[in-house]
Image (cartoon, rainbow, N blue to C red):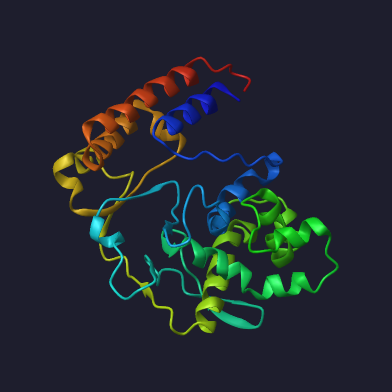
Length: 273
């Protein structure tokens, strides 16, 4: 492991986070990091129960307003900002396109959208190896092999193509999850998914520093942060305000200590890496 990855893993484990390794060719790393979210229904019971809820997100979107993300009575889950993305055509059908930030469903729903999918039915009718049969069972592992089998079947050469931001491959996770969820709800009319608008304000990284002051944060529904640039000292000062607003001081201090360790490693990083 690189020093940066090692310090990140150590920090996450100290927080009690389950860290699962997905080893793949570097050309697939971003695809897998996106797609892995919709396969969360295959997480082992030792980590999460079937009736527990799993909320998808993007790594740069952080919820702030608690009530935007609370389950309502007599619903089976929710899709936040559900009307943001219009519709799309696939398999001779028109589907609503849902964002990955955020879909909240029980673990068993996340698994069932695959187990009851047309994609699985097609795969079961094909000439399967024993290993593929296991990957299509209700005991399929939460693994790179499960993701490969289902996703390569649906997207064919797109899955194995070089991906750039904004191209067809970039939206595989969003297209796939929307299609599976729409098909599943069409079969089960008793399922009630709360489709919510994004009515609250978003805290944007380009807003001036004073907009990130603690007294103003309660007026926002969520925050859009940035990735590598967040480790710059100016950006971190803004983000640190958000951490202290969201968490108790002990946990926020832990995040700040992690930041210091990580930036020291970046400073010592050789120029040719």
